[in-house]
Length: 138
Figure: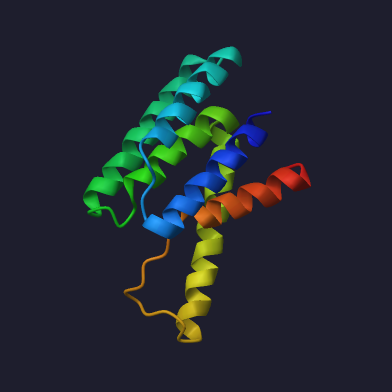
């Protein structure tokens, strides 16, 4: 159920990320509020809440340390997707998405379509992988 909730949220976030390179604050706030209720309804353990909070804090710290090379919107969407998918499924989703953007970037550099200084929005890759995994039933 959570997969089908996060998919439209990620698609909307990806559009904003592509077009304006930022995500409006209302999106992760409203999706996150719903995610907290969803996680409460699935009876998360104390360990799950701790992992979610620690992962979210670490991701926000990475944003700060990289001067937003990794954006705060990405960090907030990590928190949102983790609430709906759970920590393990969320980690799998994000790792596959990182691999996809790496391959895309490597191909762009190899064929000289992008420069090493080019920045790419991450959420379109996340939304694409999530859509594929959801449709495939994974």
